[in-house]
Length: 297
Ligand code: C5P
Image (cartoon, protein in one colour):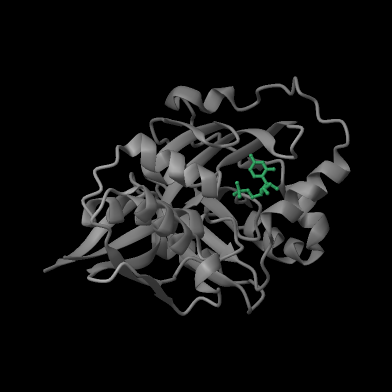
């Protein structure tokens, strides 16, 4: 059997850094929202035990998260062990804070578990994912979630943004996550571990999307690292069809949440004055992390 699936991207409506652990990781309180910008991944079982990842993305196979989690799953899967050919068609920009690699990894664990008949419980798949990245857990839930701890304690909540458009603006440069956190640490030598829980109102789905403001503690540090990001943020901030705009994750992508009852044509019409090299996507929320697109025998 061959399965082709869509692995959806995410944005972070809020990201609050609460404290820093001794190993350098940070305790977070963040919102994660699935959107319909997706990588397309084809999984096909093969007779040999090999795992082959085919992709245009300029990344060596051994370093590809998809390859790493597939190999780990294969090790944990009972015999007879089988292999897979995985064709990864990337549409989600990388180094942009959109969670593409993590979404691909979660999809790989879910659908190879099925294709190989490994019968591992979801909890076990999630714990494999966690070994390879803090963002992967969310993609097992998808939709709108609150994340705590390192971002791996996920709680699915009602999605207050589901009727809104989510434009994504990707500048022509990327940003790595460790560098963004390092810059945050430099500018916040004493992290207040009793930081006020400014995002409590998001919990339980009682957020009013008409009052919502995107907040991200990494935005300041990432703007310092990339001062040119301001020339992308300023026009987005002035776009009258958008309720709120900000950075997603550790960037470099910016996104907006539209005002109530605006059409996609109105948004497209209002978003016309960005530096040319930027890529702009108009997306909307989806209620899952991935979706089967095509099944072939
Ligand atoms: O877990 P992941 O590999 O995605 O994390 C990438 C980097 O992001 C880590 O090396 C760390 O610098 C930073 N990070 C963090 N605190 C988190 C998640 C990630 O400091 N909760």
